[in-house]
Amino acid sequence: MTITFKSMGMSQAVVNILQGQGIVSPTPVQEQAIPVAVAGEDVIVQAQTGTGKTLAFLLPILEKISPAKPDAQALIITPTRELAIQITAEARKLAAAREGLSVLAAYGGQDVERQLRKLHNGTQIVIGTPGRLLDHLRRGSLKLGAVRFLVLDEADQMLHMGFLAEVQDILAQVPRGRQTMLFSATMPDNVKRLAKNYMSQPRDIKIAENSRVTLDSIKQIVVDCTDRSKQDALKAMIREHRPYLAVIFCRTKRRASTLNEALQAAGFASDELHGDLSQSKREQVMRAFRDAKLELLVATDVAARGIDVEGVTHVFNYDIPQDVDSYIHRIGRTGRAGEKGIAITFASPKDVEALRSIERGIGIRLERRRFENGAVSAPGQGGGRPAATGAKAGGESARRGRGNAKGTGSGRERGRSERGQSKSGGGAGGRSAETGRGRRGQGRNQQQGGKGRRGGR
Image (cartoon, rainbow, N blue to C red; front, side, top):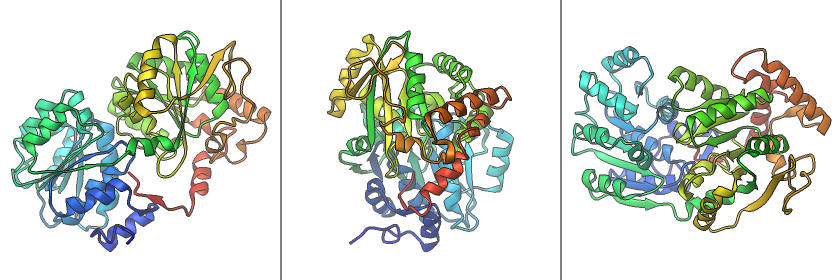
């Protein structure tokens, strides 16, 4: 028997909203977690990013919550503002199925008075970061006595960022009789202790070989280079692959900012995302990236954690991740919802051990290319000549949504040149992305038209 959202107890109104978003069948994590959550049991779900876990907890909550009661009945705690915003956007789409249902995002950097007004008027679902939630609890503006559903999302990252004490303070004010759902990509000891102390006979769900399934949809490449030549190697690979949308990971905020400035100076439509930006700037950058006004998002790990943007065709590891879990989290930004993706990691001689550790962790040896004499070697070669124009390695996915911008090699170079010139006209480097490329968002949407996808976020 085929498992559907309807067969798992979702109302027709909810099913209609999902279908309107192109979500026609549940992902494995949704198939396993939703029935357990609907049954009212505590559940621990270990699944990588990009598997659809957001709907795995939002859908059961949506079906069981009472719009007639103005009190906060569901509390979803997330480690970052970006993740809180993303989950809130999903929750508000689904809330249209339940008249009178209100959703609030509570995170730092946002107008607290607006949050206070909404809490005063009554809201049933509260989604927030630990710091801002504690702020509301101390003000007395948020009361958790009526909470029936508690979600800890990205629990491993939440504790890694040092939020254990804040989370414990919040949990102490939530009724013991609640239902608790914990979602985590990894299960370190501190997450296990948290689950043991605050959950009641939870069901364990682990999506078997999930990381492998994610990796199977992603072509992975290593480009050997030096620290000095890394920036030129990145630019060469961007020009070769011509990504539709790409995330570039840097180790620190300063490196992300420096690299973004260099990419913008070279005429690329890029912007940066890290913890030193104001909240309004972060939201502006993410809006431009989601709308495909930016081609490249240069980000740190913490800032990008949990971000789920449809249409990311490439991930570039400008700085190599230090462990296999971080590697999987990063490259999992692409290759989603049945699409293919490309992940390119730049490795200098000092990165040899980290690279070996990643290869051991994922169980495969990554394809090697080399950057030397100003060019990246062709696939299967150790170095020397650049790859053929046209970006054979995954070029088809990189060209989606570009309309007439595909063209000839010379036409692409003219588009690049025009983009660099238009960049001086202002904006976050984003509007220039339209020049010489066609309307990328429109082309992407047309290319995806009529295609159903699995359970989304």
